[in-house]
Structure formats: C-alpha cells, structure tokens
Length: 597
Image 1 (cartoon, helix red, strand yellow):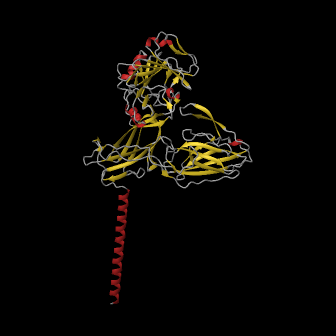
Image 2 (cartoon, one colour):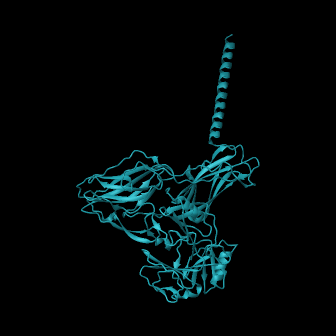
Image 3 (cartoon, helix red, strand yellow):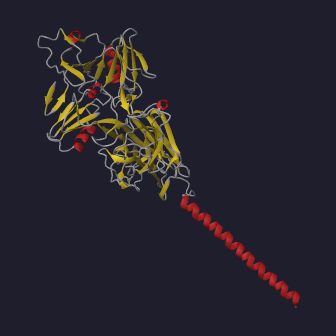
C-alpha cells in the first residue's frame, strides 16, 4: 500500500477478510514476510487486511464458521482507477434480468465487465461450473434496500467494478455521528472545513466516494467507497472529534420542454421507492414510483391539476418534491425548481435546479396540551433534552413525551396506537401499533422511560421532524392506559440502521392483556413544522436543449388571464342587457304618449 502526500492508494492486489469476533484467522502460507500488514480488533466486528500477491491466495482462509466475507481488489490494464474491481468469493448478488455471456474464466468476466462499452456493467456474478458471466447495472450500493449480497455460495464469485463511471448530480448524505471509517481509500490533510471534505468526496474520480470522515482538530479528511450498509462501516468505532457521513442517494435531473408540457426526468444511482409531485399540488400532480432508477413527472402548461406558473411570455416554472416516504416529508427529501423558457426560434432550453435543505426555523402555533384523569397525563413535543419547543423544521431531532403530572401517583402508563395526521384531507400514518411497537423505526423509535429519580414516570418516543405534503400542521393522537403497579415493556422486533433485525423493549402492551378495570384515555397534541425546501434558481440564462421543440400556443392563458377574460365577458353582457332595458323603457314611454295624443 502506497501512502504518498497524505493519500492512501492501492497499487497491488489487496486481500480483505471480514470475520466476526473470536473467529480464528488461519494464515498458513503467509509467514515468510509476505503478509506485510494485518489489522484486527475492532469493536463488534473484526476486520483483517493483508497485502500480498496472488500466489499466496490459497494460504488465506477463514475457519468453517461461515460468517466471514473474503474480498479481493484486483487491477486491470483497461482501467485507470487504483483498482479495477473487488471480488467476493463464494458470494452472489441475486440480480434481476442480468446479461449472461459465456466466459472461460473469472478474469475474463472481470475484463468483460470493466471494458464493456455496450453494457453499463457495475457488477457481475461468475459461475465456475457453467462458465458464465452474469452482468448487471446494479451493485450492492444501488440495491442495498432491495437485495443483499448472499454469502456461503459454492461455485460463484461476486465481482464489483470500480471503473463504472456515473455522474453524481445532486447528492444527499446522512450523518453517522462520530463513527470512524475503519478503512479509508484516500486521506487528505490540511482540509479547512467539513464542507470542503464533502466537496473533495464529490469531486473524487479515482473511485466512487460514498462516505467521508472529517477530524476538525487535525484537519484530516478520510474518504471511502463503502457506505453505511456495508460491513466496513457497520464495524466502525465511535471516536470523539469525528464527524462522518455516508451517501444515501444521488439524482441527475434534466427537463424536457415540449409544446404543451414540461417533463422533469430523474435518474438515481439507487433504486428509488416513493413519489415525485408538484409542491403546490401534491395529490393531483404526482407520480408514485414502486422501485426504479429512472422516473419522471409530466406537467401540462394548462393542466389545472399541476398549476404550472407562467412568469412571463414563454417562461414557465414549477417546484417539485422528490419524496422517499409514501405519506410524509422527511429530511432525506429534495426540493427542485425547474423552468422552461421559449424563444421565437421555437427551441427548448435548459432548466435551473437548486436544492437547499437548510434554513431558519419558523415559529409554531400556540402550544396546547390535553389531559387524561386518574392519573393526569400530558403529551408534549420537545427536543431531545426534554425542553418544550416553539420552532421546528423537517429533520430536527424531536421527542414526544408522555408525563404523569401527579408526583405521588401509584400508576404507570403505557402508550399504543399513536397516530400522526394532518387534519386537512385525512392523511394519517400509524407510528406506534396496538402492541406498542414502532411501525417504521426510521420515522419514530421505541417508547422508553426517561423519568428521573424521585419523579413520576415519563415516557419518550424519539423522532425526526416530518410533515405531510398537504399541511404544515402535524397532529398526534395516542391511546394511553394506566396500570398498577408497573407496566411491563413489550418486546419488538425491529431492523436497525444497517438493516439487521434485533429485539428491543418498548413501553406498550398487547391490547388483550389490559385489565378490564383500567381506564383508557386519548391524548392529542399538534405542531407546526416547516420544510426546508428553497426553490431559488441558479440563473435566468438557460442553454439550448432541444431544437425540435415548438413554441407553445400564445392563446393559452394562466389562471389570472382566464379570470380577467371571464370578468370582461360578464361585464359586457351586463352592459348589453342594461342598454336593451333602457331602449325598451324609452320605446314604451313613446308609445304611451302617442296613444294619449
């Protein structure tokens, strides 16, 4: 491993062995000075890394616990990257509709995937018995929520290309707290800020940077091609003074400007499940995406369901939202401002796109609480320290706290059937089920006790602030039941941050276990949550995109023009009938005068 100028770079084949704690690593043939480095001993999972040449591959093997993944980085002349591909022995990715090509060897399969110009190959499975190379445009990172790499497979190796290039576009990163990257692909010194470290990650071309770590006190920025879903970062340790982030998704956005509509086309580097919609019309101008990397939203210029704005003659714009959850807006979502402008030469031109998930919080409405008797219970919306809040934005760390006000009460409480709803069009989502378990841990965590010594019971349910597309008001309603002398927590099976299942305790109970003499009450609370979308445009100057577009019909009006036209026609008709009535009265009076004389 060559480390020059503060940058780690692989220049030889690297063997990487990941095994669980207390699993023996047998290195029979790598004794005579060949194993130049070996690191092991991280908390939770152990990572061993050995540099050597291919002639010693047979000497490195895990034991028979079938709990490790053997990875190998290889070089290929057809690729300029530090390594061409990673090989995971006895592993298989269950691709959907792969391109299968006969291949005499695994090395030939690597060359096919790395140098193929007809197929955008990101990964492949090589089957030794069939001598087949199954290539796909999906890899572990693109399908991490859909499929998982399957280990312990005989007769097949999984190959992942590092030469597949993809434009990152607009990228979203999620914070991993103070986790330190176990293995870094490059290290940069004298980095001034966290934003600069992120910029270096986005601009890296030698490999796909998917996570970065910044040490402010040392000015060091460490980059890795792994993400939080991979074994490397699952085993990462917490360290003080470390800020680390991993990439969740990137989006390339383009706009087609047609004669009657504008089409926002999105290409993601990861399978997307959610919806894309116009911000002002979330229910009538929406496209639900089941699972795809390419999706779009078409908005007609005269479609009242989409309400495209006409800023001036030939200039149209709209704000759209890319929303991951089916019902609520979360911190991972993106807001885009798109625009089409037409000239007399009948050409469509480039859009302007900007994303800003930051911003000053807005003031919430009056804080109100509802009470239940015997004992008296309140529900409050607080920050993670337990202080009542008056402002909130999407993504802010908040908590729902259920507090017994009676200091000497003999009761304890448990919470279930917690629902969030907007109060506008009956949109709602179940957060805590009838057993007291979270329905989606990514939105709300388990209910736990946070009461201090000498105080009555206080329950807390942590969540990140979210909102519904139709309203800034989020209302919460929960069923609270007292019990004597204590409430036993319920066991909930949940998936953690990395997709692994675990059992946790939550202060809820099965409905059938509630004693008949216990009185159930409902508590409610509401909060105003502002999203962070800022729809400012980069520039009013746009580049030509399609010379075949035609100029929209100049007789098409926006809403204000139609209202003016309607008022004008109505006024004209009213004036006409008034004139007719006046003429009629004049003729009638003239006839009466003639008859009298």
